[in-house]
Amino acid sequence: MRTSLTAGVLAAVVGLAGCGSSRAVDLPPIGNGNDGPPVSIAWGPRLAESDLSAFAGADDEFGSAVAGGLARAARAAPNGASQSSLVDAEGRTADEVLVRVVRDVDLGGLAHEITDGARFIVQVPFPAPREGFALAAFTGLIPGIEPDLSSYPHEVLGVWAWEEEGEAGAFWSRSPSVPPVDFGPGSPTGRAVYEGDAAGVLAAAGTATKFVADARLEADFEGGTVAGAVSGFRSLAGAALGDLSVTLGETGFAGDGAPFAGDTTAGSTPGGGKWGGRWSDGAGRAMGGTFGFAADDSSLAVLGAFTACACASGTTGK
Image (cartoon, rainbow, N blue to C red):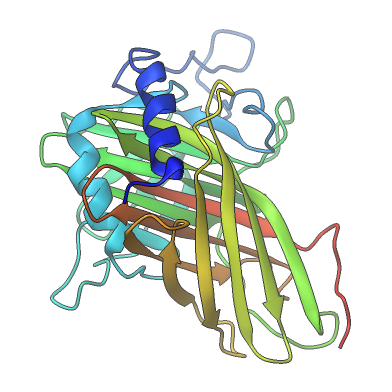
């Protein structure tokens, strides 16, 4: 039986058809104020009701051809904090996406280099070298500040697609790098609530719409488990995308801070998917990861990445 959850998502996405280009928008040129070579990376204002800003792909739509890739990626086992339709023989995402800030020798400016093994290398804000490649990338950096991004710790998350090949993926990463995790003094104890933002692509009714959403997870440091949900899906412009909620099923995590992964569900909608993540601050107070869900009847596929921290909630104790 089709649930009202799926029907609501379908209606909302149909209403948003045609709200943007299927290609990532061109970013405005960046510079040092003297018409010289760029010296920093530009990112936009906060997206609707979130702490995320876009620095690539700030339109609402991806090409609808990626729907099949989204569904395959949604069911793939994550590799670290990456999840894609490019998998190995075990159904596990082949390579983990990593992000670092580099200085372009020719232009003399900074760029985010996003790489997934040997499959693709993209430098943003410079154009992607492969025809048909689309990227939506987001960061929690505060608009208007200009840190030295080559050494300033910050998160980057997003989704990518090779539209011509029907492949897609989501990733969370940290630049310069993710520090080793040490659950020692100063780490959370008891239970801790993590809240943050998610971003990705939702495919339904022939349309693939980019979204932002709310992420909430809870970790039990005594039992070594973590679970949560992603809800409040809306377009980048702020329009609600139905009443979808993706449950991040409970999974265990290791004391050495290794990546963790589990299964997903979406209410009573028949289907399934995977999610996974890793601790991001070295002490277990923040995390990032990916998630996906696909309906069995192919009416719905969602793929995204999230970031969340226990900054405000603290711990509940034993």
